[in-house]
Image 1 (cartoon, rainbow, N blue to C red):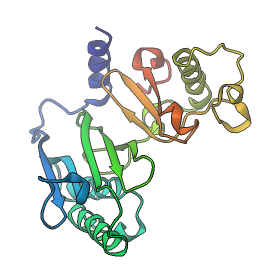
Image 2: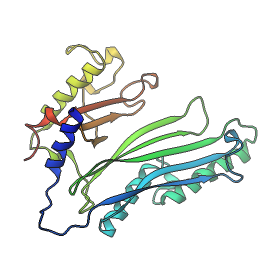
Image 3: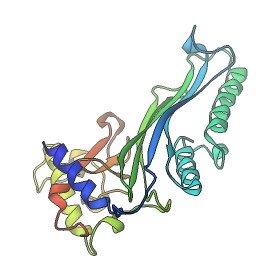
Length: 253
């Protein structure tokens, strides 16, 4: 029920297209790009590399906006590799495979293959907000691999970034942080006065802060802290989901 209420609320908040206007509906098709090292990975994934991204391809949007979305997705699946900056998804995958081939040529007896997988999910799509989550997982050797969740938020009409400032009234920061702090502590079973650093969470001045990795979901706004960001790797990532119902007084009308 809460999810349904949240979806109704976000639809009312973001949908403002005049009914009398003829508007091409925004839609998308899910596609997958997969690139494998020479010989493929069907027989032995421990002796190959593969790069796979599942992503939405949109229609009903202006061409510059579609280009902007794709560029942001490309950047999100680049793993922060400087060699991949400015390249499209296919090229990024090819660079990943080439890096593996170069690694194997230098250390042919190295055990284990490489992989990178990402799934780009449309979390919210209205006429004024597109929010995407990018969920990735990878392994390039070492004791363990890595994973992360990242968000892309923009106005589908213009391609401009959609921020919290666009969503909330002025001077919202302290009130939003207070709500987030309460939800965070409840999820970690921490008392209101408990020290965060004493419980192995690292925040400036031992005070909870919302980060800039946030996205809009049907039920609320999610702030996602990836591995190592505020806690040791063993603690895993942290998700703080703030329901829209708790933010009504802060939201722009």
